[in-house]
Length: 115
Length: 118
Image (cartoon, rainbow over all chains, first blue to last red; front, top):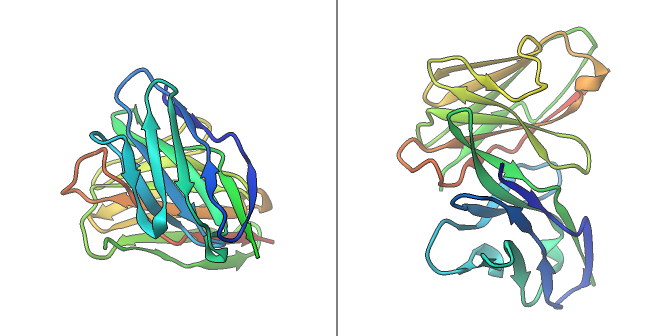
């Protein structure tokens, strides 16, 4: 079954520095990957998605991710972070189960941007 | 963009009471909605898949009689936590998929409900 592993539970970084949040997936079939952001006490907001096509995906708020099939990775990157990027980030994959396409989340990575 | 409204945002109640949480898609129709549970500093765990006009499909380990789901229309799904106890305290989040889009397209999430059982 498809699953995702987020390798870092927390990532501290200084403002205006680049950041990479790692995500690896396991799958034997077609892969559909997503990154979501969650601010405190809120739901999830979609940052970007990979369904097919170009392996470099650009999302909102200056984030991008690269789908790497050989390394089964979908790491999230931003060249220069802001204080407002402090949040929880979730990588997710579609899993077909019980007749439905369900979204399965990784454990999450807490991004803490310091001044 | 697509908006999912979840109500209430926060509820505090006594042990033994039942609590209903609503999830509405405001500007699109959703034949399928999903209910997740999130413990502090943890990921979202899928509880059940809600289908308009039919019974919900529950994930393994989720008590059907404890978490009642009703999807009465294409824009509304409700989750009722019956006879709630302190261990049911959690953050509950719903999501919905626009029926006009493919099954691999992103889901739209509500802002969640913080449930605290005293």
